[in-house]
Figure 1: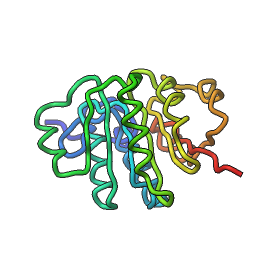
Figure 2 (figure 1 turned 180 degrees about the vertical axis):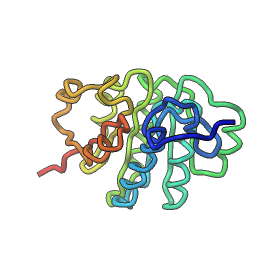
Figure 3 (figure 1 turned 90 degrees about the vertical axis):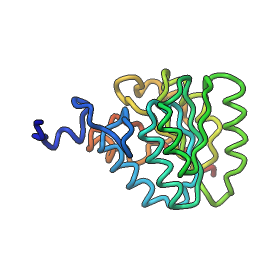
Amino acid sequence: MNYKHNIEDLHTLRTSFHEFCGFFMSQTYSVLYCLGRVFVFNRNIKYIVEIGTGQGGLTLFFGVNMLARGGKVISFDISRPLPQWFVAKKKFPIKFYQLDVFGEEAAEIVENFIKEVPKDEKLLIFCDGGNKPKEMLKYSKMLRPGDFIMAHDWMKEIWEFNVKDMPYLEYYEQNMFDTHKTRVLSMKRKLEN
């Protein structure tokens, strides 16, 4: 077996070795680093909505972090992860919904989840489903001031012109995400004056 890798493997999906807790992620390891930094500097992020569970590696990363801080994760996908993922997720505060995020039921679940968030705590929505611009536009409107929203495949499936329809958002630590080649758009709901 060839174990030769270089530092670029942390930043690209050239290889199929991007896993967390044994479950594949559609993101690179550099995304975990950047998200970890966001969590360190925003200890009040205790609620996460993930759109696009995929095989569940990133979901478990979110679950580990929320377990450590007493938070919760809800994750949506139109497909189900592997059966062994459901065994693993039992150890973490993760609730999975097999729903279309553009349907009324999913929107209602997210709205109710956001109502649970205490005023001094924050929410992060991570968009990585099949239509990131539409996901961001729909769910960013639900954010409270100071809450976060991110989207995977920045400058590949979601572009600056998509964000122009969301003037209530501002970039958050985008330079860090770009420097580490994460392809993640990172934004925050502007604080109201």
